[in-house]
Length: 279
Ligand SMILES: [Zn+2]
Image 1 (cartoon, rainbow, N blue to C red):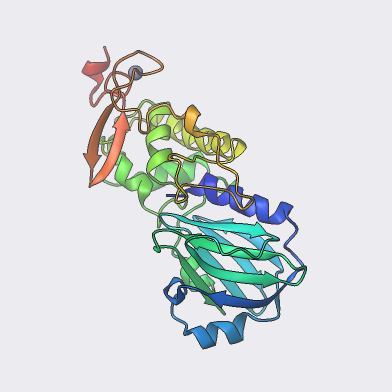
Image 2: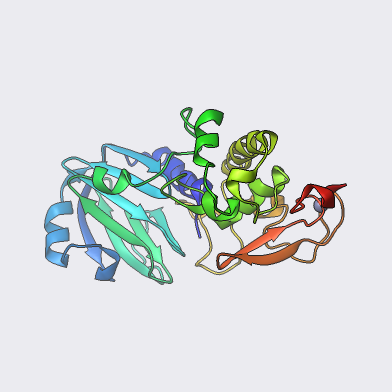
């Protein structure tokens, strides 16, 4: 599932592809359920002739400002955007936008969980998001306050209403980087652990963006950027989907457990549950 680095990669691509200033001439829905809360007719009427003013990321949303509407796109499991000058229908293409320069912006979604929201006021939806971990406002003080909960740290970091953009891959990687067991309670972390985790989150996300995100498998449902490229970060992952393989720090086999139903990867030696295990 695309997380913050993958969504940021798509947004960076759309900006580099110079879609800002172009108009959406018209749209075609191949799978109307990809559009939330609007009928096909309402969507077609609202979207046509709107100019793309700005594109950005908020949490895991791609936000396309189209005065007077805003289009929010959540890729969920397998959604992707592709910008192309070819008319071919891609397998699993759900929505197509025709741009004023002749190019096409496709929303492709093999598993159909992705959603597009065309809203007059996006604030109502976006204000539910927690703090973005790449903003300057995500300070150590702010992070420490969020951790004041009796909740497993892995579960807390996945809560989009607290911190927006992290998912299973980068939470596992950040916890490994900070040497914290994923089932430790957030409010029982030491000051040093909290500081390390704050730094680890930023480090892991920035490196993944540099590598243009993580593409895991080989099929079409895996992450591809808006120009159709795969991310290069998979080979840099230290624990995620490395079950049974030796830890890069200590050679202990990486373990997989479930934490609140989510598959979780960690090194039992580097990320001990209690201090005694570390000695
Ligand atoms: Zn280890």
